[in-house]
Length: 313
Image (cartoon, rainbow, N blue to C red; front, side, top):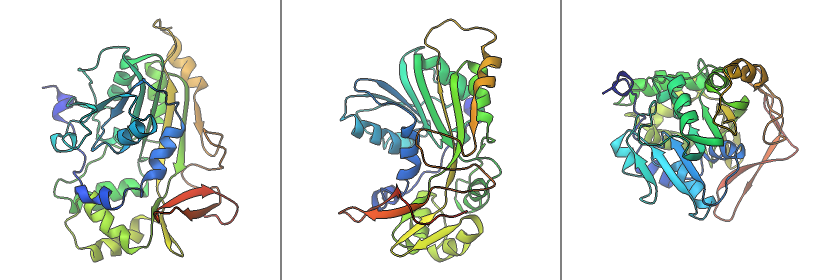
């Protein structure tokens, strides 16, 4: 066993009922990740640190099953929850030894990089398995953010398995991507709030999702120390900020040894700049986001839609 495998920090094993009872709370963070990429029928898609398949399930749904999904999930309990239609691998997230070179069209990672002992190793492996011209889109919690403190302080203290996330610094994913040969790189911090019907649901969901060994009342009392919460009538938003990185593997196998410097010079680290959508936004330290309103579909599920109205700073 390699040192990287031995050092792997497994994700929290959530209660299955958490996502089943609140299936759309996290849709903003997942859908923003998919905004960066192009999904095409019959493509091969890699899900890095797939957990129970929340991201892969959506890719499968959008492509009506016409997709080859490869899920890297080292935790056997989470891997067992994956759709049997997916290829589930027990490889560590730092080394996808089961995946051949140049075999993947699209690589995705939804808040899994912080479980890697080496971000560079994970991004280098992603570059290796992508076909020429393939895309990578990953996102994670920024280091030194309030959200990182929630995971490495509160969840660590009250989840039986603990939590010791190796969160990336803002801008580090784009630098690492450039270093291994990716081009057309962007990285930006985006606001992707979690959406609830009312505040009381937050503690219930968090208790199950993060496997917290605490009563909901105690979890609720701790929320304001880590999160900004907006109660808007029959909707409650929990501010949630992630850093998103998108990059492309060059469309040829040859690699210019000078590429790293060129790619880094050309990388766009966005703080409120243009991205895959035209909504205004900003990075850490001065959130000024698109004004939003909420609508409910016939199932009573909340979704954010850009409109003119209110904003938070």
